[in-house]
Image (cartoon, rainbow, N blue to C red):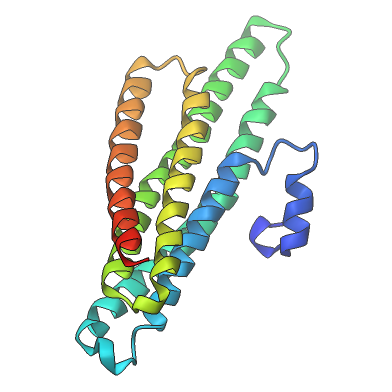
Length: 208
């Protein structure tokens, strides 16, 4: 069954089972989807309010981007579980002959890369989410500023969780160039997200 078609209770039960997937990577993407949804909610609470007429167009743009980002995160939630299952299938391949061992190793390396790339995409999407949340917090309906703040916090949490899932897979990848480049991407993304989310936190604290 597709994760996105499960009820909340079904998903929580599956997550709590002894099955390794879905796991932290899917949860990171789900957090991102919830953050994107909150950002969209803020825009809906802003557009149509006369007090915020001057930002209606801006909020409309944020709403469109937020809805697209929500769908992207939900897709990544599915992809993360699929990537792990692909790697796990390679792990169970036969290894009796030199040829079987070589094929198994190659497929495992492919699986590890895929298992790293998917959460890396989640991390990248979190950068977009942090930006949307900041705009929603600063320009949207003031009564919903903490909802925008929650979206920003979810971006931070999802990013950190996604980074964990990338890094644990990098440990088994032999392609040094890929590993180096990916680590640099992680560092840049996390630094940018932290800067944005911290800015949102300061803004909200100044209002409370």
